[in-house]
Length: 141
Image: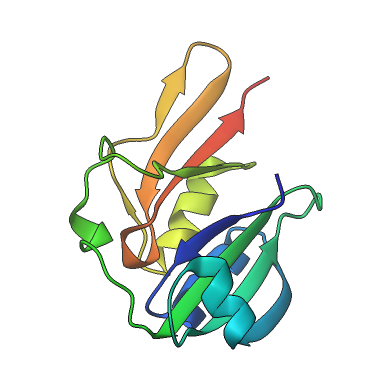
């Protein structure tokens, strides 16, 4: 897999959130023109992207802000975790309580609780910028 893309309204807030989570900005670009129209099947595409990379370099997340045509769809802040489509993106973290507190300063809220799964993990779901559900997993032992 090369990357997962998430469409956002506030690109800078989304970038700040994922930087706080430990990702690095790999690059930014303006995407527009005939190749973009033909690739995504829309006309008049104009978007800004920020490509985010996990610290180990194995995972990438593309954050996309569409200027034209405007983004469409339901308000992701109101969509429950069992909605069809992309469910969530999970990140392995150390010190889950600290990560939850830091992301809270970027507007993230717990969907449920931080829970322990057997003797293996502490897990939680957070609703991040624009309602994006992010899962955190801290390996125990």
